[in-house]
Image (cartoon, rainbow, N blue to C red):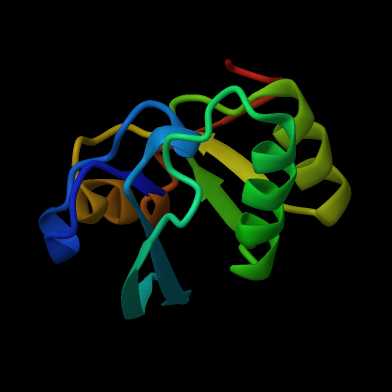
Length: 116
């Protein structure tokens, strides 16, 4: 999840992944969260630079997500994630915890196409 700040489970989700200062990477086993890492986005602010976009996506790929929760998933990222088998969802809550809980409860809407 792209985040506005590093505040653990109370970190707020932000609207645009490439501009997000941080990402939450949670491991979930069944319906239980087993770990949470907040990782700084080394490419934040490189919004319109093509090479920055390629490097940004490589950064995301390196996180090896099974699920990506974000308000916005652009066309390129959507289809690359889809090829990787990554499921993409629209957030329901404002914080990491709210969205993990909603995901575990099956309450998040899966994205059928790009949302950016």
